[in-house]
Length: 415
Image (cartoon, rainbow, N blue to C red; front, side):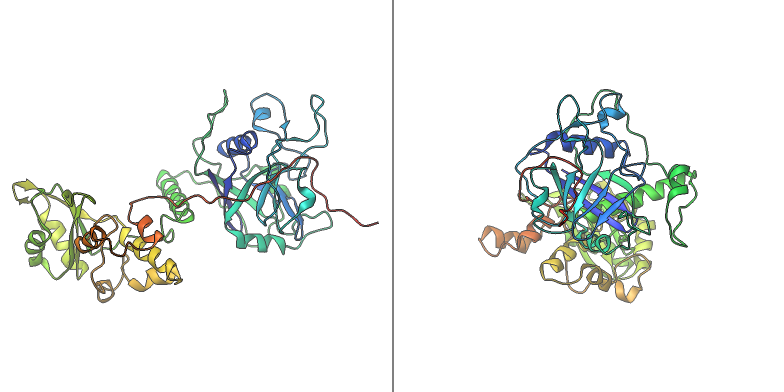
């Protein structure tokens, strides 16, 4: 169960311990869902110790639980899972010094992220409920930020947006999530921000097309963070056609023969079932040039092939890039540079858009590969197996555990 947190310096992915700390995890997820944390700032940083945030007022004195937002209690009781602050990037709740219904150690909305390992002082005092699993390099930037005497960064670091990647909890009665995130922070927050020259907020966008474009960009960033895309800016090639409504009897060579009159074909692959190898009724055809691909698109749509009127469109799949990217990660290569070097994006030069060998789309199961599998040959690495399924998400990591509760963390001071 994860949350993507977009900050003013980069993106973090937090995996939550929903089974060990269900009450705290639910509170955090529902606050994210209502966009409660949007435009909150990191209001206190202690080097190699913690970075604290989650207070909309930015003072360290505000914030309340999702139940307070719905008209209930401002705080909820701290949980005591057997989780420790053993690793940098541990996400834990700050606790109030107030006593609620005779119970000490209550939490609202404020939380902190540890900036060092083995901070045993916090164990047994605070509820650990998550772990930063992607974006750990941002913690170095946060840890080195210049701060004033109160620990507030001289240049504010904001939590701009939160995206829930997985939420197992039902919404509390009365919870209403906004249709979209606010585009601008409230004016009182803007007035109190410390923003360097040039780092300003854009004016609110009302154009529907621009809003859709930004939402698509956010979704692409999410797919990049969870590993389903090599990076958000990747686009499908312009020299690949998607052909569907095929007769199951139509073979790769049949399509290659029919489409070859438009130009050189680098690959022609009918997508098949993994087990039975039967045609699924659609295929990808890659031409040597964009011009040949465009001519085939205009002339072959709705043409009768093997008693079926086929439909032809430009491919929107980046599955082949992803397959190469996953394999290059396993080899230790730079994913972004590797994908760029294939030269198979939109607007790539025609000479660079040709195949270097015959690579299969992730949705296509190569016959030679199937024979090797049935013969008990090389089954490939774990990454290759995972990448063969279209859209499968990465496996969740398991983290170390420990126990927590108490006041807002402070370092012991020697006297």
